[in-house]
Length: 205
Image (cartoon, rainbow, N blue to C red):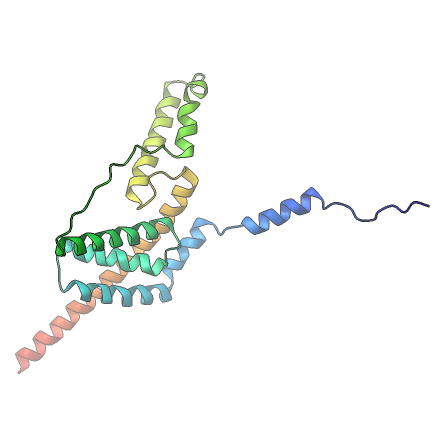
């Protein structure tokens, strides 16, 4: 008597469920909510003070670079925009070291890179997909693409991202900037209050 095998291959539904569970990511709003926590404010505040002390009351550009570097460090390089800021800061440091040492900075001629897959696919299929669209549809599509390009230039390191990834990075970056503004405003208020106290003590003496 021939015994039949009782083992059966895994169903496609279970495999799909496993792949969905492994690739699940929190929505951008949930990722950006971490910047509203008090813990992140405290961490960024400490790093911001350390970065500002290192500037020794430098120019506004130095203050902005210090604030952005502290923000990227607080993000721990988990986003594309934070890694771009950290890499830009490292490149500036190397340039300063070379200038002080009398070295020369060789600028590489960058080859024109290809556009992102989203825009490349849209451009390749543009003629076919836009044949049935009216003038309003063409104008709307070009406006959306132009706004995405502008947004990609505003978010560090995100010029060539496809639209979904770009929007996810933009949501996190805007939330981080809002936390930066609130922290710097609180720091400015604290410094102003300390200055008033010092002036009052000096007048009393």
